[in-house]
Figure 1 (cartoon, rainbow, N blue to C red):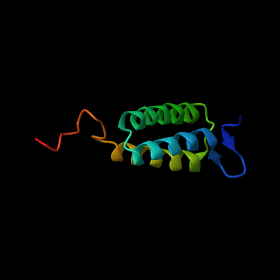
Figure 2: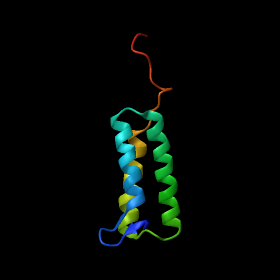
Figure 3: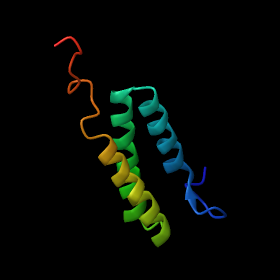
Figure 4: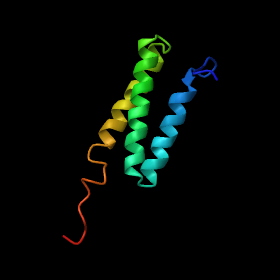
Length: 85
C-alpha cells in the first residue's frame, strides 16, 4: 500500500487516521480519539523525518495536527464533570 498518493498529493494513511479521529470525536469516543491523535502525530513525524512529505503536505497535515490538538484539549473522560454535581 502506498503511503502517498502521487495524483492527489495526500497520504492515504494519514487521511484514514484523520477520518477515524473525526468519527470518534463525533461519537464522543474520547479515549479512542486521543489514541488516534497519538497515532496521527507519530506517523506525521515519521513521514516528515523520512522526507516522504513535500512542503505542501507538511503544511497541510501539520495544520491538521495543530487543529486536532486544540480541539482535543480537555477532551477526555477523566476531565468530564458529572451533570449532577
